[in-house]
Image (tube, rainbow, N blue to C red):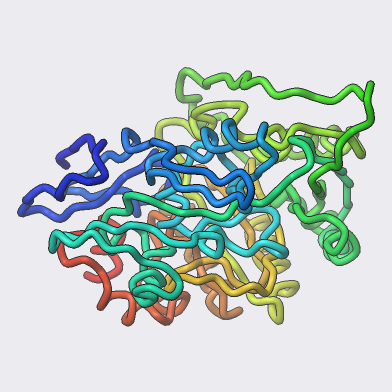
Length: 420
């Protein structure tokens, strides 16, 4: 795989026999940002702020800019990105290519809904301006298009106004899955940002127990109020832990401790970044799974089948004994995503990480696929390393229309796997 540093958004694409693919910060946890045998255009150097209108919140930037850098710049000025995923170490171009979602999907939808226009460099040499009403077909293919329609160079976004860089947050412990649905339905209308961390190794009455997290942007605080600041105190995990440490006993112990302690905070003020990016406190946290790594599994089930489907998934996981240290459950709203291959859709989404135990883990994931497919759900390409062609085409029925808009010089390991 050949690597090319890409810093100039006006430069023409390289002449290459092998297929091209842009790579931002490489946070996609599968092979959508791999291009084995091809050329990767490394776009992190294309990271300039171009323009910002403080009156309207309209922002122009290059596609290699990190979301965290944007937040560092815009939060003090009273503006916030309308949608952020669970990490700030994602580029703007990557957020578009995967049409990322956040805890506030019910009120804000996916990232692509807030893109006003962008510049796309095609292998034909054309530098096209695309948007919801300008070359709308190509715009819809590029949002959530996994970087396959060309190189995104410039992006125009609509930010949202905020009164402070603080959030009012609340954490509530629940003892079983039915209690999650009750809390989610009750608090959802009051809190813009909601999600739950659940224990996916418990059984019986405790199936799906966890902690519900809610947040909303806080108003200005009275003079003299002690408010939390933000300092990036992230630490790195410097080495891979032995794979043998990740087993049903350590997962059960971790989940038990987390369940007993995580909800003690109750209602409090937190900095935006502290609340929305808890995993960023430990860089390379995935090393806890050892050198064999892990299989992310991120699915969405439509509302009509979500309650039964999520329960069935958790029962199958618990029976396998292959729990996940991190299991996130949240609700998607009804706002339609603009991309042909956008993953976010009306329903309930469950995100997990399974330690790689070879064929045993793959059999479990195949069983989970059957449950998701029977419920009419889909898997997230941005976190996939083993989705079947059948699962992809069922979950993304517009894939054939999308394929006609792919730039012929662009490809990825994922795309070739889905089109053998």
